[in-house]
Image (tube, rainbow over all chains, first blue to last red; front, side, top):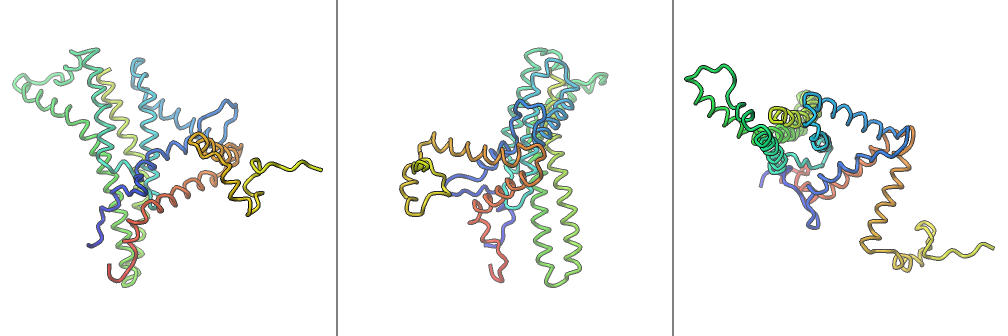
Length: 227
Length: 88
């Protein structure tokens, strides 16, 4: 059986405990709970500053009713960010490469925004299905299109996160394999590939952060429409 | 003359090799005891390296390095097939 590049995405288990369990609970260790001091430790200060930044950024477009979602959106953001970034370390496992986990995060949250909208302001929520100023003959087609676009949002959220991270990890593995394989025959080309690998790693760090942000931002946008 | 310390209260570094078996037998291996030990270990590490006024990068890096090592141990059976060999 040849080398299978997709093996990195199956969760290995030792003594019956899968690594995905540790990978999902480990980020909690990195976040100290702030104690009641005036000057906190550097890690606590950093964490508090970052949480303030994220919460302000996410909650600015929402009105007061939307602020009930502050806790879950901010914690989701930090969870995804840490998981994505930790997955870039060698030998670690990234739970967000599993479609099951991303869909499990996206579906309930999206459904919650839809149900909130339908319950509190049903006509306004349904009104979003038809943009203003459409010519009359186009209305039936547009309603169908908008409904499809609405129903496909959770799938898009989940698959976007999965695909971005999986593709990034695969690329890193492929290019590093190429670098090692080329090293014995053509060292110059291998050096070039190494440069590509370095740039790719920088890109992956950026993608890890951006994808977490996009996930949460889109959810807050869906919330804005419906709250 | 200082009173002899009970075996139960000695720290691990002060236990003589011959007493190691009885020392281990006296430790608390109930789930509550293990949780307490984990909590004490966490607090020791946290207060020594992170909860200081000018904590550095080392405190966090040691945790991450330990995480990498743990992940390597967990996925060893997968990873050993990826060694550089002439014939796989």
